[in-house]
Length: 200
Image 1 (cartoon, rainbow, N blue to C red):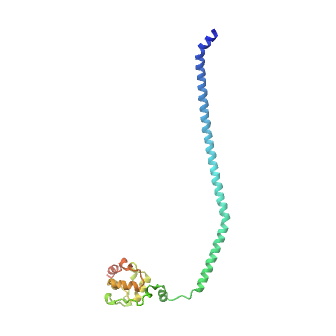
Image 2 (image 1 turned 180 degrees about the vertical axis):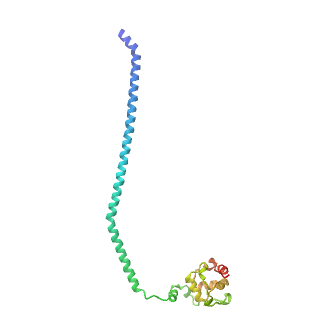
Image 3 (image 1 turned 90 degrees about the horizontal axis):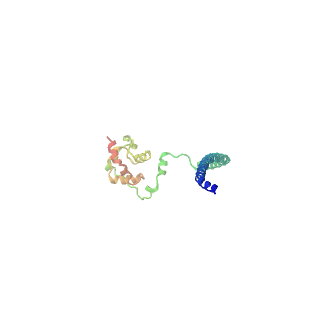
């Protein structure tokens, strides 16, 4: 019995040593496990990066391969399209008569806006004045008048800023019809005001 009582008396010492050894083991085990896990994760990340790089490189090579395979077909289609366009242009050139004089081109460019009315309106030159071709000024200085509109105005008999600055509403309406211009555009561009400032 003495041995049993002695063992029971020493049991707390054994238990303390056992717990100390167990805690040391657990600390060592978990620290080794966490170090191994971090090392494993680093390796896994490196492998993933390498795999992604190789995948991208392979995709880029695939794109290059695809492009080199498709490039001859693209060139062939472009050449065919150019040949078709060239034949169309040649056919159209055969159909086009020789160059027309500028007066006829201007006449053909006009829409049927003027011609659908039975009687063309006439401008009242008494309202804004007469001018000769020798008194001609550069009407393209007025915003809204380009070379084509200037030519139309000159054909009608409008040559200078003085005439335009004297326009009345009825003159603008008639002029809009005669030159086949957008209704209301002369007023919006303020030809009268611009001509007034340019005539000085």
